[in-house]
Length: 71
Image 1 (cartoon, helix red, strand yellow):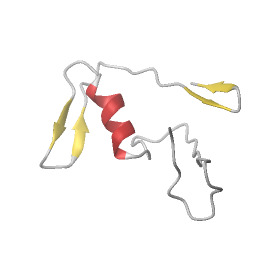
Image 2 (cartoon, helix red, strand yellow):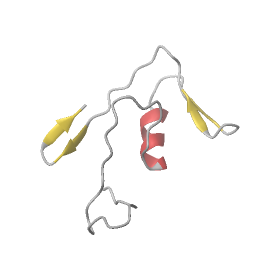
Image 3 (tube, rainbow, N blue to C red):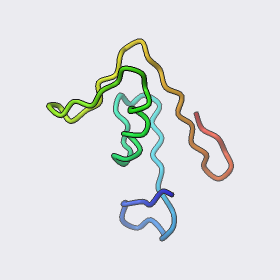
Image 4 (cartoon, rainbow, N blue to C red):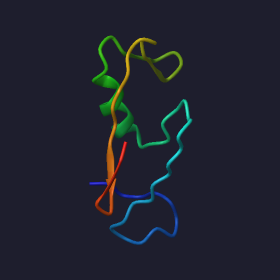
């Protein structure tokens, strides 16, 4: 379940930000970790506090909002 941390978001709802060119995911840490930890040979760098992902790997992430699939 998603819970929004954005002030003014109704209880039980989540606010979504869609950006089709971002190099960084603006998602809660648990979601980022779930996505990147499943990419082969990806590793989390404690030094930079970022995921290091091989440049030849891709990921297919899909979200459904109000019965509309975004991918």
